[in-house]
Image (cartoon, rainbow, N blue to C red; front, side, top):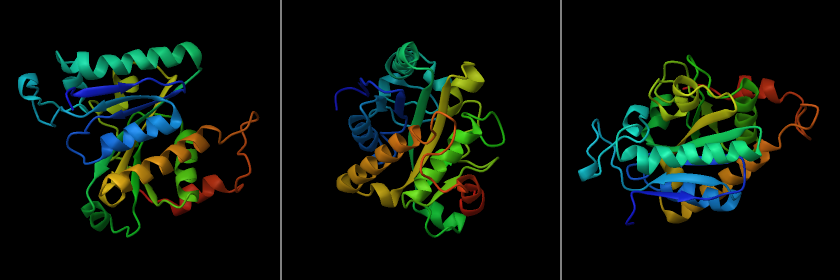
Length: 240
């Protein structure tokens, strides 16, 4: 890969971002495959290695840290394409749906005590919510209904996506634009252990996002779903 960051042009109100594609195995490939299936925009970091400081000559930066993203070179390569695609989507749609794709260790399953844990969805719990409550509930419900076992990123937890410099908060704590909704998806290593598994996970997630975007009808009611879907999310999906 010659470029540290690649971009994907799309035609849907969705932007996928892989900030740690270099460090989190197969998250870049998952993001690329999802973008292909969804025909949506994507910004994928392949070459910036996560670090506490920015050193563009040695490919070092944390692309999930908004402060790092505003540094010279990182901004040109990674943040500016995000801005460009957000602006482009807003010219054609009433809202933008951003999903940042991350990877977490299998050890998280043991740490959480949740034996079936697949993913953790961060949406700013305990801080600035990065999307409306119904959206994160709907996404969690569709994940659950589709056979995955997601968790909510709990307030104060490392998967909440609530920190001021967390990329998930770009359009809440840095740029106030409520037409941009964001969620952070942490994927267990088991679901991205090799290229084939990553591709299958990507295709499943793409289908779920597509279903989630059409979850409600024109009257704001779920289409052909359990009428107790919100209660299911409350009772059956834990936080960690």
